[in-house]
Length: 544
Image (cartoon, rainbow, N blue to C red; front, side):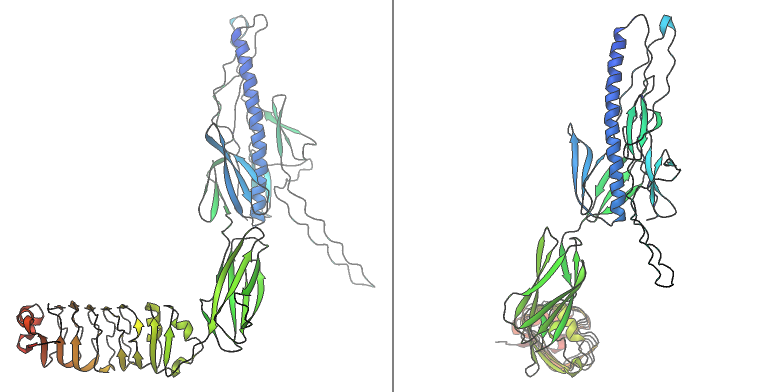
């Protein structure tokens, strides 16, 4: 990772004035008490700094190892959140503290014999951070400069593997090169306060280097303590560590364990047919285990699971004698187990061009494996949805379609638009709405058109461009007919059973010889908008 990540630790300034030699003012005692209190706060700050430095290194390691965060737990003090405990999939949990406001320091003591005491120098907190160098390795920094060891080498904040040794030269039984040494773990700097000075160690506390004064001789208003992390937020996918300098570090959250498949069920098989189902796992860990077994042990299928890695693989299903069954797929990450199912069944056979669809949206899978160009005539039984209608429209040779026994109330818009292969259509008996342009420009649809008895609405241009002839019966419950609905159809007679004239769009019908309406409604039709254009050919009829 080449993104520069610098973690700034807060500055804190404290001053303490010298005291007189002859008279100990009670205020001096109070100031000494305050000094002790400030030193205690400094020690607490030091502990938090060391905790955050160690946590910083864990975050860098998590980035390096593609680790995931599994949980965030707030740390509270006096009802306020002062930090968080962060849990990882691979790394140990860490604690992160964010800043608290510093408090006002105390004034320095007046000098002896009325002379003002001199202001002491401000104490300061060393700014510890990390920065990625040109070798893509993160190194520690102090006050913006590289933290160097006694040999002048930068100190790593992350561990890297050692390189393999080179091969031995060819010769008489030349010896192999030795393996390179393992990369050393990154070093975690440590801070402490000794004799009022900040000290740093980069060898696990074996030796210490003085950095700067921790306490001043004149108190000033304390700055915000340890403002490394300004905020920690999360969404569904990531945790965001926002630093006070505006830097945002992003580490992914562990996803909820789940599995998806490359196919939709049911899978339909011929005898001895094999299908490969690819799976993808989200969440879990690198220890994910996938198992597949049949719900009913009927020996109808043989299963084999082949992992590609911890997140993906293939389930091979071979049908010996296919039956109705389910493949139960379980996924375990060592802590949690989930299960999913793939329905399997025998591929239905066409019996004189009849196919039954039990589950809406599955017609395409039912037709999988068949020669689509050989399907010229088809009767569909069962439950269809819009995707099934699209499947029918895309059959390249289908000319005769019978959907009378299909359960469908609305035929979608443009359902069979400009389908020049269709020559005959039987609509579902349950149909109530025909969407606009449903059969527009189906120029080879001829013969009589039979509309379902429960039909209530016909959309604009629904049958425009078709060549239906003969009689057309408009059902009793019909309430609207869109513009150009039957504009090119050549009906000789139209029978409209509705006692109340349906709304009739312009040019919806094309000059039939007669229009028959209920006898009691003749005048209503002759005066109704749209129908009045055909007043001369409207005749009363006694419908049974």
